Image (cartoon, rainbow, N blue to C red; front, side):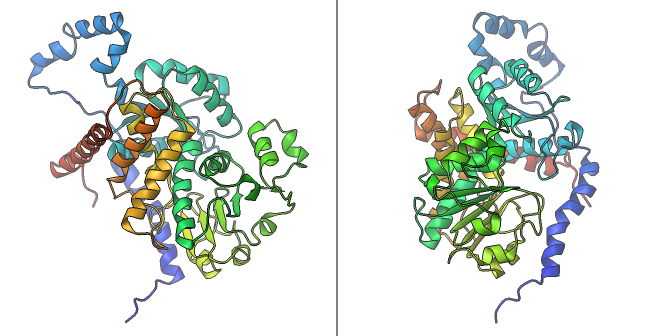
Length: 448
């Protein structure tokens, strides 16, 4: 007997449940991260080693040999998650305090999935120069910086400046992280429906930091920019959009002139006619993407609607309109295309070889490994990308990223692929075991 499909009402209740649980459990724990000692404390005499007088010896060793900070401290495994709260999820400019739950969540994903220690830092400024300066001031304490939820166009300038001026790797997860995971999903979705990346007609709905970075990595992966259409709130990007040219958003103007070879004008409905794939990262739905637009896409169409917390169109609506493969950014639906599959493994590999930056080629290496991990298990319409509980994807991704960094000559340490896998696997297993042990011991309370 065929399994009964859930009703729309049941699906909606399921979609709304995480928000209800979050409102109950965030105050239950009063936050999601805390500091736990990494060293042994056998008795109080050990503080003479970890603090004064013993600590003076490693301090002076670092003073004489600054690079030894990576040997004596946790700097090499510590990432700052930095935000000004101006572009939080799909919520917009809600301020640094309101952004803290997201940044804490990011920190526990870093730790549990990648074995990376991360700390949320929400800044009380919206000024780009002050954000850049703050990150530079933080460099002595951190091995890398993850910029998060910063509004455009300043997010582009902040990232580029810091990639040039910082001496530790800095990336913007809403750009490079989203792009790495989305491209991985698109590689497999196109493979599943039998279409070639270089021939596919792809529509990017939304012209923010995420989609413009996705466009860049798609092209690096083999997509033809002539076949890409980008749509913002005023319509399709093209060379005659003087509003974009005069806006000062050089990144958006660049893609206005590089994509859409046919110079198609119009809105999203026109852009999606006969399109093979849609990648939407725009205003949360439902109703942002219309079912009738999806219905006019090409046969075996692919629909990625990744706005949070609500996708631009519910997945069941996209399927009913004719889409063959559907993905969202949510963990409670199939095919989650979400940054959480990218940044833990990418930073793990970056930190393990002490890379000086995170290049687009390193992001693409992560995309290809993510795609390969899913393909190894067999692609299906409801499985085009690994899920977060497939823990092996993260050390595989870390190795691919680290190997690319070494190939590009930006790694300060070198290891074999086997050594890198063992290092990453060990760090991730340890992080997961710590949480399980704390829960078993009752030090992490279980909710009622």
